[in-house]
Amino acid sequence: TCHLDQLTETNALYGAFCNPKGRIKTTFLLVKRSEESLLLLLSKEQCDYICEQLQPYIAFFKSEISDVTDQFKIVGLIDGQANSDTANDFIVNCSNQVIEITIPGTPQRKIILATEEFATDTMALAGPYEWHETDINNGLVWIAAENREQFLPHDINLPGLGGVSYDKGCYTGQEIVARMHYRGNPKYTTAVLVTDDKDAVFESPLKAVLAADKLKTIGHPISKAVSNSDRVLILASINKDLLEEHEIVLANDSEKSILCNISKPFLG
Image (cartoon, helix red, strand yellow):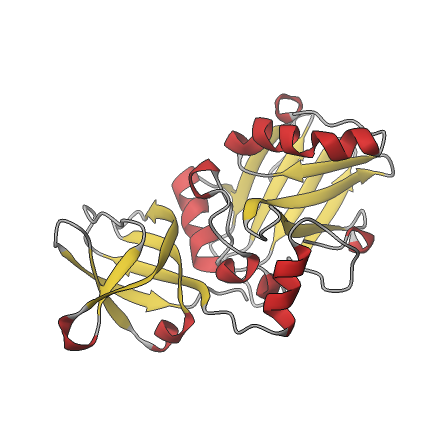
């Protein structure tokens, strides 16, 4: 979905690979390692599947594709300070055998890809839960096997995050994505749902108690994280009209009600 002509050695592109119906197989970060080499960063469990899916294209363009995860030490760095920059740009800095990717959003973060030992400056190594919680608060979606081919780019606000180009050539699913942009009225967008009920079960589809105590399907959960304070955070694709609410009551098949705060992600 992203325009590779916009990729340089100083930026990374956030984008998606879709099926013919425009539904996302995976989201990714694309990094230009050299004139002859690109790196695709995505959920690790997607690697084998995406290599297989891209193989027909790779063969046609006389290229090669392989999983090089084991060649890199991959870490996340995080700063406790808020980031005043609201741009959606992923900034890349390459030095020797280290690739540093600055992630937009708040707090400030970096992904480090290194083939040798490196110093971590003043930022701390992030734990997996802390990193995942920050992804959710910023609205960054990493499609995994469990929600593969479930969402359209507009369902996860990919255009608002700079992940969709409408000026590039054809790609799989483009007709559906472009029609939604030019002629449609996207119904869903991303939202952050937060509850203090650490035992809450978020079933798909999400159902909420709305007017007249009637249950209504409002969207689908995307990813989940538990904060250090035991709050449960859900990044969800929901009816965009619900962003005007401050709270929402969800209910699952066990008829347990879940009171959630609802907010818009920092990015997009």
